[in-house]
Amino acid sequence: MKRLFWIGVGAAAGVYVSRRLADARQQLTPQGIGANLADGLRELGAGLGAFGAEVRAGMQTREDELTQLVEKRTGGQLPTYGEALRSENSGERAPGAGS
Image 1 (cartoon, rainbow, N blue to C red):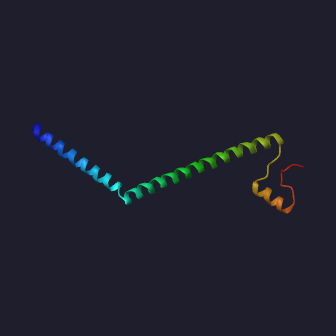
Image 2: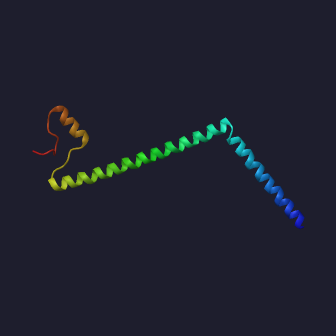
Image 3: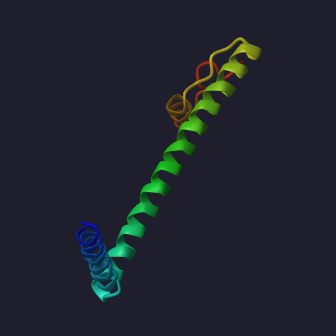
């Protein structure tokens, strides 16, 4: 019974090692290296996209905080970016831009 157990363990280990070697051999081919490189670049792109989204969200939060602070201290309403551009192009002062 012990011998049968060890034969089974040896066979399982042999199958495991042979599969790992086949995978390693595949990864060392030009196609395997290209696939690994493509996966790495895809992960890098996703990470950079997530970082950019976090930065934009932080910028928007900080802009909202600063807008509230300015409005609280001045007692007036700040114009939105679009309102400021429209009034600048027409030569008028933006609503809430002061006196």
